[in-house]
Amino acid sequence: MFDKKIPHIVYASDNGFAEVLGVSLVSLYENSKDAEDIVVYVLDSGISKENREKLSSLSGRYGRSGIRFISARDISKILSMDVNTDRGSLSQYARLFVSSDLPKELERVLYLDCDIIIKKSITELWSMDMKGKTIAALKDAFSKQYRRNIDLQPHDVMFNSGVMLIDLVRWKEQQVEKRLLRFIKKRGGRIQQGDQGALNAVLSKDTLCFHPRFNSVTIFYDFTYPELLTYRKPVDYYSEKEVREAVADPVLIHFTTSFLSKRPWYEGCGHKYRGEWLKYKALSPWSDTPLWPAKKESGLRGAYIKLCKKIPRKLMIGFSGLLQAYGRPFIYRH
Image 1 (cartoon, rainbow, N blue to C red):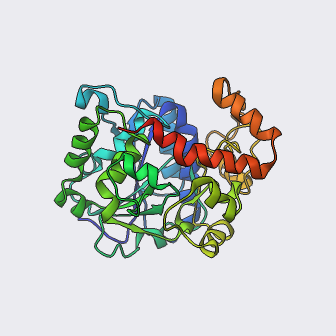
Image 2 (tube, rainbow, N blue to C red):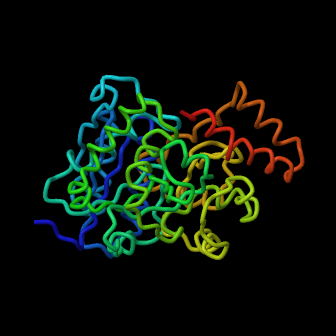
Image 3 (cartoon, rainbow, N blue to C red):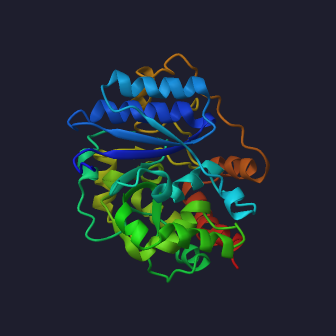
């Protein structure tokens, strides 16, 4: 029997991100002690036996239900085609199959990316009224051009799929999985923003946009609010007050990629909440592993990052905004 009071959380990870997942789990367990229990599922794209044991030790340490590892599906094999990631790894596509791979009695699940730490109890987000929508998520900062590439109207919602509260009953009723596969196949596996683009194409009109405190992303920290608007040119976006609240009092901190900063498992990260991530790493089975060496960006991206460091910030933001709002979506025009 599904107990609505007990949060059910699902992650997707490969072996390379197992440590980052472990740190996220520590933060989840540490800060959600008010929950009667927490059930965690991991859509597993090749996590090693040693890392699975380390992850499993955490649920035991905090007296929670054992972590359930589920072999992730390979989207490329299912569709018999090469499927692009755009960003991230192919393991992220595993979340498209939540309704098939999770226990049938589940009515709701919270999907989290591994690069997230939970700063306050997960119960507030878990118990949110979804107002009849299939998912609740963060309104993402994308321009109108991105919408055009996935058959959306200029003012349709685009969301960040790194935190999704999912009504599994509606997901099944609306045949979301079938519609996602149909969209990916129709596009020949080449979709702007990868699986996130497909999710937006199918669920844009069925999404409740929650307060950004529940998915406080890196652009909130790397840019001032006016800079964010110039850089991303988002449509119908959150107010400056809401973004400020998300930075000052986040429930979930999402260390998304950014050309202006490093993520906290890399050397040289300057994120406001880097110390929080390191605190949970110190409590994890990976406490003794060194931080990852900073990636040396090469090619066009490397040259661009070097240029950005040399030119005045206002000019850099303006020029980067043109590339972000118009250049990137141009690559995926169809």
